Length: 144
Ligand SMILES: O=c1ccn([C@H]2C[C@H](O)[C@@H](COP(=O)(O)O)O2)c(=O)[nH]1
Ligand SMILES: [Zn+2]
Image (cartoon, rainbow, N blue to C red):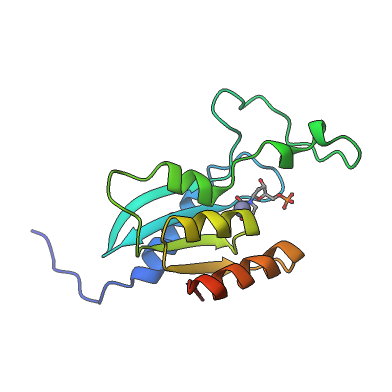
């Protein structure tokens, strides 16, 4: 016999939980980021920061002098993967849950894809995140 479980569905907890679970798949030894795109309580796509397809053997090193030996030249951000992985549904007017506040490059992708809200778990203060805020503010994307 099953027992009915009470309690209202907390979408924020659930979708951020999915984003956190996605982050756990990242092979980046320093920073693991997960993202989950949701619309009308349906998950449209998830992603985590990873190397591009067929490049999984690339190094996670961060050379200060050689950009070709720096992961930042290659890694796909979690937000980008979530957008690329989305199912056939339109992400316009959706919400993205992400474990780390998006960088300016991801902010551009979010705006260009019509995502209307970003819910984030943690924040690293950088010039790129200042730029993200300017982009979101100008484009009317809410973040919390
Ligand atoms: O919006 C973002 C910003 C960063 N990431 C990923 C990309 C990298 O794998 C790490 C950042 O590495 P650090 O060593 O902390 O500089 O985070 C992302 O997925 N989305
Ligand atoms: Zn990014």
